[in-house]
Length: 101
Image (tube, rainbow, N blue to C red; front, side):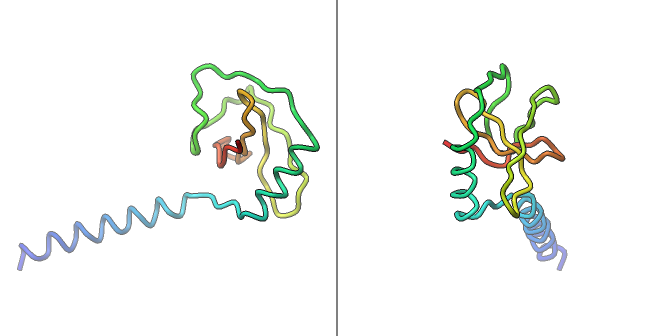
């Protein structure tokens, strides 16, 4: 009985971990991406360089980086251009939610 219980508990723990990871992912719909790209194209920013910061989803930008608002309905993110790449950022956590190439 104990032998069968251990794999079941381990499986439940793994499934719970996967559920938590999925809940943390940010989804930007294709429609939002199109509107955001158009907005960014109309409101270009000068590119900045950030040494030691990788432009990956989940990376955190330092407080010294000024985030610009995106005035698009239903989009709460801010943006900045780093190394000629537009980056969408969650203003509350300063985490990158998407890198737009």
